[in-house]
Length: 231
Image (cartoon, rainbow, N blue to C red; front, side, top):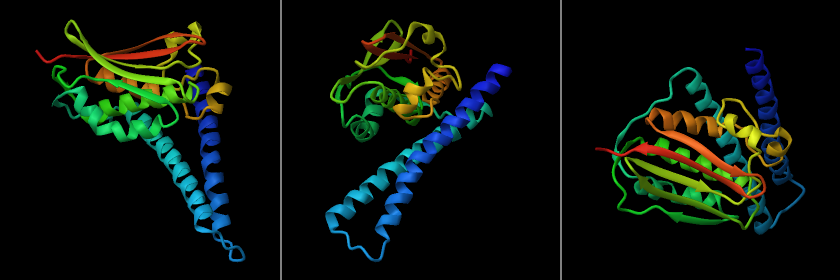
């Protein structure tokens, strides 16, 4: 319990930091735009508004993560499963993935003829976007991020790979733990509040699947999750 309380305190401190950054940017630019003694040309004003939108999206993602963590703790996270394919999920989230990986080279290999799986399309899409977002946080601009899916025995395996900083071996076993953070200083510099992987784990396990990671420091990480194929 003491360890959980320490992790919760660290999470709250990190959330406060991550909220202040976009809020400060939004407030500063909004104050600038409403100054009556300055006339901004349309290009400059549009740049300010684009930044406000981007920072608002960041706030929205943080709040959504916190809401879902609360639902997980209260066992209220809903799953609405239906027969579908991961290729359909990828179609639904392709624009979001492009936006998340706009500074990276995104490679997708998810064949349209993959077998059916019993899934909540929205939730599995959320797992993939969270993994891609995580990859962008910990890999340099211009490097490749791959999303691939293939069958293995009676399982469908989806993989998100990057060529980033990797994960130290001592953190591998706890990387999906609730409230756990790898090297808080480094993670904080790269954004995020550190709950996305825990959310992924809960969603995958509610689909009777498993999630794991293979990683080497300095060479990147490969996050994989399995889903049982419909018999």
